Image 1 (cartoon, rainbow, N blue to C red):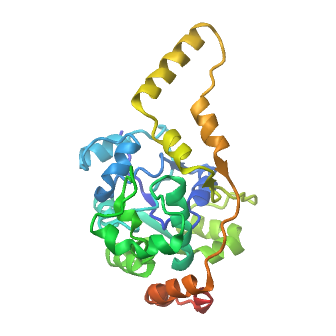
Image 2 (tube, helix red, strand yellow):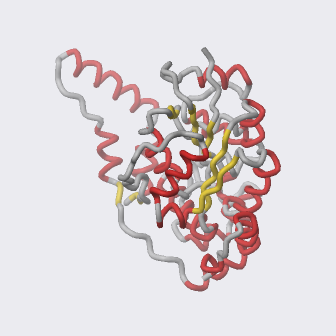
Image 3 (cartoon, one colour):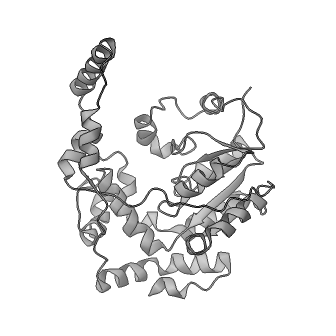
Length: 310
């Protein structure tokens, strides 16, 4: 039986979507499929290929993918891809696939989003410029195809100002999704009272409360100690993949434990150190550039967001 998702978390990036999915997975009436395949966002084809999705965007391929739910009877079948909000056609394709789908958008201060997303790009080796202000200044040149980091899967994601255009993206979503079928969460509220936000989502989905009271944090910001070690471990050459396969095969034949040395190296290369905050000058530059988006979010949510511009 083909099951269409009736609930999608569309983003934004770096706004708590991973944590929300982890909480909702524990509810007995909710089933989530694998996240972040961007299957409804045709412009992120490189990302889909990296995740193993090689079919062209079509009704048949989407239905084949969502036939992978575990077969139990759930009220909610969900998916989460944090780039759908950014996608020009992601939300439109979701609603074409299931006009009754309910949508959740988690929104954070755009200034913090672009700074945090730049750090994520660095960790994923889609970016090689560690200085945020330099990466911000290169956007126009990168839009013309120059200064693209080697191996960058999605050069469009280097356009940080567009990533931070959350008010504009929300307006596009609201023009497509009927009122009552979307729910907007401010990251400020999610951090301040996670339990209430979680309960509000269950109410939005017409699900009973489950008494959940523990909400650990997931997907904290991580850094690589070495960009080149990260490049090697995240983009393993073909010969290394074959070597790992045969080595693992023979070790298992001999009943010996297997160790993924490359994954171990990648883990050793990670650091949870805190990044130095943006300078006052750079932050003010971002505030000026993204103020129209903050104003749109304030109008849409009917909230005073002046503190986002400090």
